[in-house]
Image (tube, rainbow, N blue to C red):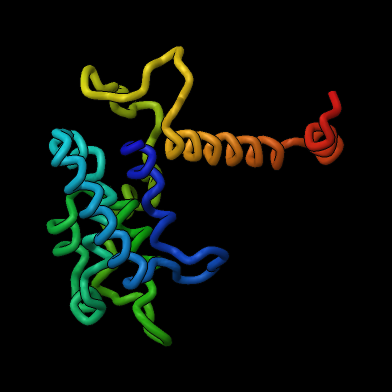
Length: 188
C-alpha cells in the first residue's frame, strides 16, 4: 500500500482533466496534511522508519508544492535541488514545469536547469518503477484476520466488497463491449 501511494503521488496533486499547469498549492496542502496523519499512524504502529523511506519522494513533492507561491517563484534550480534531493532532476523539472503559480504567471527563469543537468532532465524518468518495490511485510502477531475462516467483521466485509466491486468494474471497463455486457447479464 505504501509503495503504491508513493508511486502514484504525483497524480494526487493535480485536478482531473487538466491540460495546462496542473500542480496546485491547495491540493498539495491537503495531501501534506493527510500524509502527516498517515505517517503519524504508521509511526504509532511501529512502521515509522519504513514509511518514511517509502514516502520520501511523495513527501518531498508535497513539501515543494506547499511552499508559498511567492517564495517558490523566487527560488532557483540550485536551491530547489539542494532542498529536495529525493526528487530526481527529471521529477523536479516536471513538477516545476506543471506548477500553477497563478493566472498569467509563467515559468520563472530561475527554475531552468543548468546545462550540465539538462540531459538528466530530458532523459530521466519521472515515474517510480514497480520492479524494485520493497518487500511485502505481513504482521506476525496481533492481527485479527484468520486465513481460511469467514470474515465476521462487518466493516472489513464492506471494505472487501468495495475492493471487489472496484476491481470488477475496472476489469469490465477493459473488456470489449460485447464481453462486458455478457458478464453483467450473467452470460458465459
